[in-house]
Length: 344
Image (cartoon, rainbow, N blue to C red; front, top):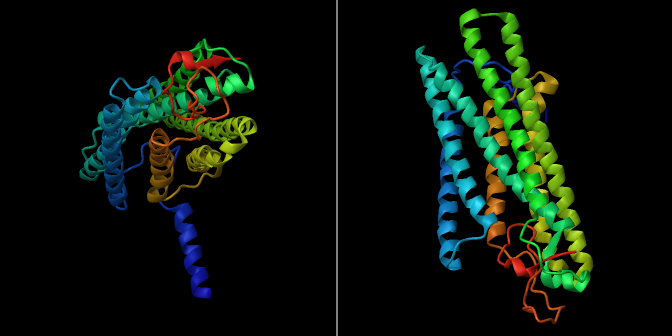
């Protein structure tokens, strides 16, 4: 028992105090314990997911025999781009570490890779923000025609997402992305100045800017996580109240919202851990929980939702409309034309 306790204590100590990823440190030096294997596994994982997205797009495009819905098209563009950007980021991390070991570090490439990292995160932020505001817009403005006709007596005169929903999506996304990218670019500019001046004050300013940037990213994903859980549950409750027979399908969207919530809260915890405690996390653990978990798992959930019917077919409404119109899929289902949308 004592041996097991000592092992766990050593493991816990290594987990917290290892010479790993500090979220506020200025350009860590090359390490003999650089996680080549972890980055290599990441490159393979992101590439496999990238191939899966492309295959899924080809399948959906062939099945639809026409242009895919705007929501699905947006995801099929953004997600592969995010996968490729992350692969390039990991490859450059390995290259930069090898350069640092040889003493000929390319700082311009290092700065580019840092901005690329933030750019990739911004792509995911755009994807998740689009999805979140689709849910919010669905809850408060639009529903499937048959559902609204039965529950609210709605008319059929609005498009897939209202103008207000579209505007809110772009405004919030633009604000978050600009702040994240501007802070990182300013940080990189100050880094260049540090290399020439070696000013402790300048170094301190750079640390503060980098910390602020990481904190904004952490808080953004914490808000994403809580919002996905809240609005996903709210949407389920609303539809469940109107269609008792469809409750069996609600677990799918609830699982989706809970999965996103957990992944994003994990990113918040690991991104902000160093800021709150001053302790560093082992590189392998940091990479796994701040990149793989909050990016790959949500991407797989989105692909799952694209290919899964979230609710049963509606049989409660016998109108001139197609009686098989299903309830709105709160994730990605956009197979209905504009005349099958409603406002209430």
